[in-house]
Every structure is written in structure tokens, then in C-alpha cells.
Length: 136
Image 1 (cartoon, rainbow, N blue to C red):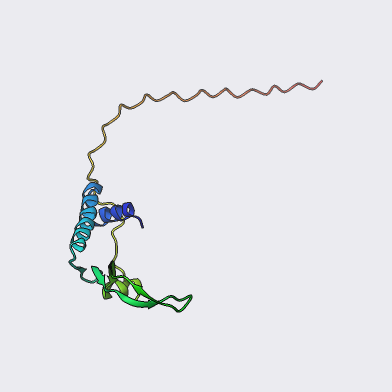
Image 2: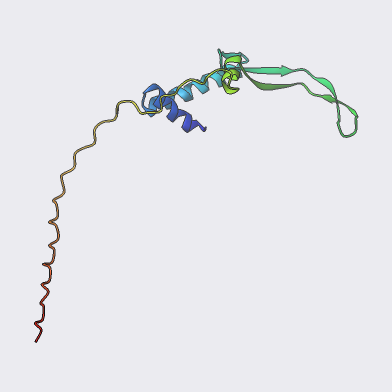
């Protein structure tokens, strides 16, 4: 599922128009990204935990040569799936039911078009009369 598919599904499920769903989904993503960039943890209960983790420098080994090397300190992004998400993804718990039918039309009614004049039905040719020849 791509972002536009997610927006469409949210719009159908919540019964809001696509523009509102777009701003909601994009706003949620922006808030998560900005909060994690500051170094705070975002924990969406039953779904996922988003965090910025600082890893210290450490000793490691080159797997090809076995040589000991120094690994620099770095910062990484970490997303952890929480129990509620895992249970649904692995089939332990049932997935929530989604409303896939569009809600009552929210859009403005289309302007009425003038009715096109009907064409007369084509005339059928009269059946040909079969003339029987008299026998002599």
C-alpha cells in the first residue's frame, strides 16, 4: 500500500473527503518526523514506537580477515512494532474491519444537462410479397 492508497482508505473508512484525509495523514507523518528529529520518542499505543538512538563507538571484527576494527559512534532511526501490531500481523488477533464502501455523497450534485432529442427509430422495410407462379 502506497501513501495515496492509505489516504484513500482513510477517507473511505472515516467518511471524510480525500482532501481532509490527505492533510490528516501527512500531518501525522510530519509530527512524528519532527518529534523524533528532536530526539523524543513517539509511542503509538498498540502500533509502533519511533525513536532516535545514539550508538556508542565499539570494537568489531572484519568478517573476511578476522582483523579487529574500530566502529565509529552513530545515530540511527529505530521503529519497533508493538504487541498489538504484531498480534494482528501474525494472525493471533483479528484485524479491524474497514469500511470500504463510500459514505453518503459529500460532493456537490453535477449540473443537469439538457436532454438530447431522441432520434426517430429507423423505418423497417415492408416485407416483400412472394408471388406464386401458376402452373399450366
